[in-house]
Length: 435
Image 1 (cartoon, one colour):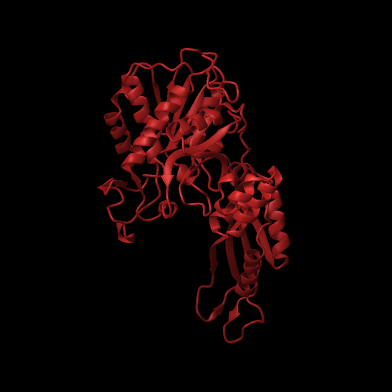
Image 2 (cartoon, rainbow, N blue to C red):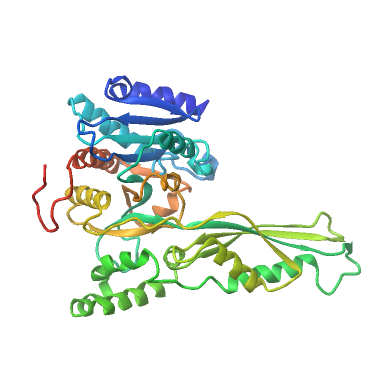
C-alpha cells in the first residue's frame, strides 16, 4: 500500500516528468520505476542514474525528535526515515528533471533513471528486473551513478577540511553458518565440552584472528593517494615527501585509528550476527549454530574468505557452510580519461570548489551491483553532507537532511545531467569543452 501511495505522490509532485512526451515511464517488478530520456544525438552512449524508494523500519519509540515518517522540519532539517537513504536521491533526481523539462530541455546524451523498490532486501525484484529488461533491449551504458558515498566533513579524523568520496567499487559479501552437533544430555551430567562451548570457541577464534589487512591492494590506495595531502598531523612532512612516503604516511595514520569505519576500508570484516542453541535450562543441547557475515575486501574472493574461515576455525567438530555470498564488485575507472568519474567530479567541484574529490570503496552494497553486465563503470555517490554523528543516523535514530543540503542535491543532479552533454572529455588540465 505504501509503495502505491508513493507512486501517486510522485506523479502529483512531478507532473512534467510523468506527462512529458519526451520521457518514457515504465513500471518494473510491480513497484520499481524505469524512466527513459532519449537524447538528440543517438550515437552518444547513454548513462543511468539510480536510487531506491524503499527504506528500513523505524519506530518513534526509539527516541526520534520527530515522527520518522512525518518529514517534519525542525531547525533547518527534514527528519524522516529515508532522508539520507535514499529518498534524497529519488526526489533530487526527479526534481532536477522536472526543472529541466519546465525549461524545455532536451538532452544530447540519452539517459535512464532507475528507482528500485527493494534495495534494502537485495534488489532481486526491482533493480535485477530493470537490468533484465535493459539487457533484452541491448542497452549498454557509459556509466551508472547510484547511492553510496558522500561528502565527509570532520568524519575522518585528522583530515583538514571536507572531502567528497566517489565509490568506485563495493565490497563483496559472505554469510557463513557454523554448526556443531553432539549427543544431548542432562545438565546434571555435563560433558567436558558442550556444543555451545565448542561453537563459542570457534567464534572467538574468528573474532580474535581478523582477516588480513590489505591496505594498498584495493581501491583504498587511490583514496589515500588523493587525501594524503590533507592529513593534518603530517602536513609539513608531506610537503617534502615522495609519492611512496605519502602512501606510507597515510597507511600509518589511517590504520592506527583502529576505528570500525576505517578498519572496514582495509580488510574483509567479520561480524557474528546470530547465535542459536538450547531449548530448556536443564538440557545439554545437541545442536548449536552461529551465522557470521563477512564484507569482502576487493583484493579477496568469496572462495578465499571461506577457506580462511575453515583454516581459522580449524576444528573438525565445527561444520562450516557458505549460506550465500558474492565476490567484490569490479573497480571502476577513475583516471583522467574516465568519463563518468570526471563528469561527477566536475559537477561536485563546480558546486563545492573547496572539496577534495577522491575515489573510495563502499563497505555496504547497493542496487548498482546488478548493473555490472551492462556497464564497465559504476559510481556510488550523492552529495549528502555528513558531519560528526551523521553516519550513525544512517539506518538509525533521527535520520535527517538539512533543507540546504537537499537543495544542493537537486542542483547537483540538475548540473550533472547537463554536464553529460559533451561528446568527450576535454584534454586534461584544460577548461575548454569539445562541443
